[in-house]
Length: 376
Image (cartoon, rainbow, N blue to C red; front, top):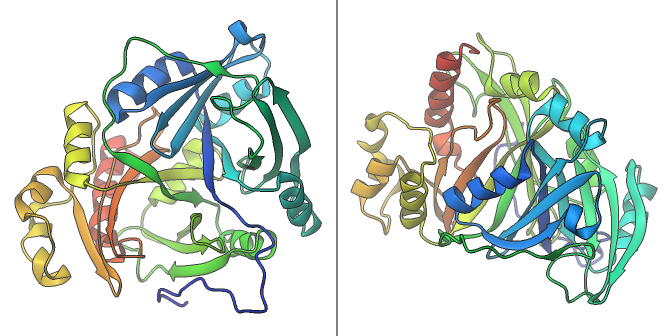
């Protein structure tokens, strides 16, 4: 399996049939959106943005929208039993339901993808209020995860029609999160290439890099991964599947507890990872830790870096280098009761890759957590 980083460039004769401007929002179905909003504000520095629920005429669900720079999170909970949202939470626990993609033409995005075989989630609809109109349409990807195409060039409201501004007196400071760098999906045995083909043929993505079980393995567990990227490189979706090992891998653990394929982690970018991670730690966010020996030969492995080694060691931040530069990254422990969804904090200093040099140390750290949970 190819394991080199390749540039995602189109030839002059190719056109991007699915141009995407960026990530519009992530909608996470949660058991208690009011409390979850408080957590993301307190721990991650997100800010109040918008609300929809009983006060806006909804009877079945409530949503709080949070923002930090270019990242928008929509936290949604059911207001009564028997809803699809409630069933989703009952089966999967709290997790990402919708990855919304900002496009210039939602109808064309829907038509292009469904014509190529995408399963429809929602046909194009126009939503209006006094601030203009938004066009939305959606398709399914792996598991029950949805890609929503959002066209908002004729809208000037706070978020979307149906939402009102939400502002409270409690407003902890942001911590420097900038945008969604990538989102990692876990799929079942033998399904990775199926979904790689989906992103290539249905959405026009290209394979940016791949890793096999020789790259991502420890004494006990292994996995395989391929990274798909859209035409302009703003959307990157690594896709993982389990590989054979002596014990149960983190991917198998995720699939068992999520009860299906889904988003494993959200990687969010920062311009100063030391300041961001320090703030997260001080606010109670827990991170995976690698052994201190990781740092003994770090500079020999990655070369000269701008940062002092001491704070990186103190915080547990990992470093890796590719031909374009280097990156710094760290991973939270799962933020839900189930060992499923977590966050990655990443700062890129030119690097375009995903931290291949850190895989072994990282997955050994995950295995230590699995052993504590009794799921290894």
